[in-house]
Image (cartoon, rainbow, N blue to C red; front, side, top):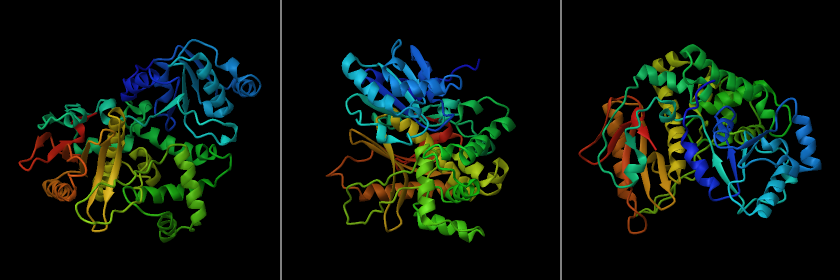
Length: 424
């Protein structure tokens, strides 16, 4: 039996169970939701057990309370197969009057939410899981802590052992738990298998409408080409046509992207809107990202050698990897990851903003002195625009790099940190 690798979500789940009657863990298939929940659950109902699935769904219609009996916390895996369980769990939590009763896991939003009559406010809390960060997979030393930086630490000290060749592999492998520790060639197959499952099956689970696999492939390939940008659906539709393929209608693009969101394949980053000294207009469009860079790699049909031969594409997909990791880390800090861009062209790849108002500004650069200098310059300009009479000054400015052996603080105060030594 494969040994369980500790996840950052472990401690988040324990904390949430202490405050609410039920916790809903959402996220893409294969990211480890069920395995993480199993570590703390005292009893388990696998809704999609092939031998019992039909029986379980029928029972959820006739007597849902019977499915909820068992030691707590009770895990209901793939609960969305029986949406009526939501109201039954809410009712059960109300009448038991205890916290930590249920854990629900789901890799898709239920196709039929009309069977849910209550929002779950006050009874449920949500936890989003994503594929593993480099720290969780053992590829980052974790010597530089974001928590410590938000706590006031000024200096950083860490060493990364990730070469550029290894980084190209990690982008292509992704953070899928099943792939960790596998032989490299086999590990790379996991992301492609995931992509194939999305194209041919998973995307249809959202609304039970059969979608054309070739159209899904074309859309996902275009989306991969536009990682890290704020392009609208119209541009994606045009991009499909420009690349010599039959164009997709804008309505088709919108419906397919909505389906990919509902199965947690794409996760766009919202725009950050700080208080500025000037009247600079801030762009409010979300930034396009897959939830894991390996999905974009699979959609493009490329591998590590292709990334090493095309550093521009490598840089875009490295940014997706960094955003994935920062999201995982931000969750543990009660924060969110945003993106900043104004109409003057000033951009900041990632802003981690905590609930207490603290925030850190991060530029992502694959590596090299010129790019690091460029990133640091952007951060200093953005810092100078922020009105610190109306909001806090940034806790830190960081250039997050792919290459480079060491983490250090520049004379101007900007931190340079390789992704291979970062943690929450």
